[in-house]
Image (cartoon, rainbow, N blue to C red; front, side):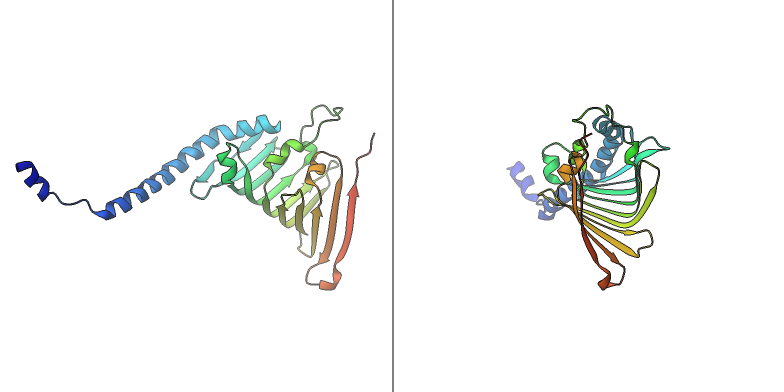
Length: 231
């Protein structure tokens, strides 16, 4: 009797508590989970990329958002700091949920304020190996990439500056590229027909469109085909 009387006087558990508690758990996971994942990536990701890509990789401290599947870092360097193969600043990226469920990093969207690419600084190992190519990069290339300002340096040290660079990768192997010169006066659009062939160093085939800014009648179209020599 006494127990039942005491129980009858207890205040009922309010329904809003069950609504707030899951939200509180999500917030705690988002805050502390972000920090834990960021610390793990800071400690392990550079070494993972170094082993996978075959050149030293350094990454500035990473900020992570688990809820959005995004990450940001101030700088990413592939290769030597003074002469990198790739150097990107103000990098932001998003990961695909499908890739994470399969236990791998697969980039959906990548953006950077500044990007420097020097392919000649990428180690090639045995240059006499006919099977050596860049197909190992394929899983790391994003579906979409946007770069505010970029610079490409060829093997002779000649630099080409571009702005507003956009990369859009399609499932059938095509890649759409669009970029302007540093002044923004000329825009080049290209459709690469087979990214797999390019990475395998087999051939490069692309449809090109060149147009001056604010001049619709200045459009020039052409095709590009490059096949490596057998020598």
